[in-house]
Image (tube, rainbow, N blue to C red; front, side, top):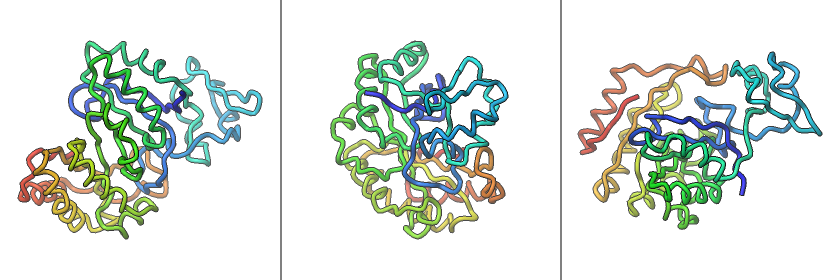
Length: 279
């Protein structure tokens, strides 16, 4: 079984508890305006435009497919900036075992692995196979998801997952559609299901004042999550929008002030949440 892997970060302290190896899979089923990795949204269509502009000749077109030479790449991202399809030519088709070969190099120094994206739940069988291998190494396993794929349909995957780090992009459906182009009914259903089954590890909200009433949304989100928090406590992460990496047409959106972020933390703290992180 092959997975389409965008990148592997050997050491990460922001993708779950402790030091972890983070594996990013290619492809996403929503289109967040503030996406900080817009090149992970779509799969390469092999148009070849990136080949023509690569200054290091790390890309070539062979038999109608773009080929990537990692040893020649200097990570200038000219290819990503050129791509009109929201993709990258630098993905790799890898087996779960090939990914684990990279992970094992960090085993003495990491607490676990986190699989992210794009949206990693578009490749659930690959993630399940990878997690089974990780468990044999006594590593923790976390899923980083936008919550639009029904977790109830993947009991085998959840059985080898320690938990899910779930994005709630916006609480109200009309705001979620404005941010992502998609409804959030399934996101909230997943939050409830995961919370009731002790699989909700973290809930995250990216704060973008230009896109919706963030105070109203965070308050409503907190009220929705309180009953789940009482079943099994989880972390809430308040993430400030930053313009780095976003598409040019969204780069001038307002960055939330520290005062606003602290206000949101206070709203959640007053509801009884204790593990609230601002980044």
